[in-house]
Picture 1 (tube, rainbow, N blue to C red):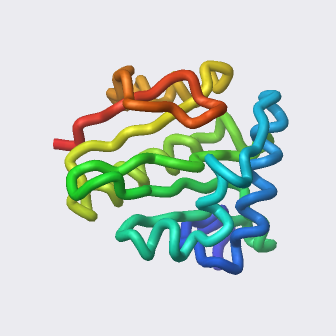
Picture 2: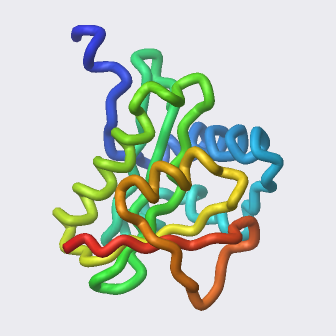
Length: 159
C-alpha cells in the first residue's frame, strides 16, 4: 500500500469498541467534558447492535498501525432522520482536513442510506467542530432534550 492510503476510513465492528471508547474519552478529557458510560456513551459498548443493528453506520479512521484516530456514527432516529454521533478526531490529527473527511463521508453515507435530515448535539467548548458543522450548512435548532454534556443542537436538511 502507498502512504497516501493512510489514514483510512472503514466500517467499525465490536473489536474496535475499546479503542473507540479510548478515543472518545481522550478527546472529552481534552475539553474537560465527562464521559457518560451509562448514558450518552453506552452506544459504543456494542457498536454493531447500537448502530448497524438499527440500520445505521459507524466508521473509524485508522492509521497503518491499527490505531483509531477518528470516528463517527450515524444513529437512526426515525426513517427520515439520523443523528451524527461520536464524531471525534485525535488532537494531533486536527487541522489536516481529516475532520472534513469524516463529516463529508458521514453526509454522503447518510444520503446513500436514504436519510433526509441529520442532527447532532455538541458542547459549546468544541468550537472547531461547531465551526466545521456551520460551514457545511448545519443550523441550530431546539431538540426535545439534549444529552447530559451537550448544550447545543444542529440540523441539516440533506435534500
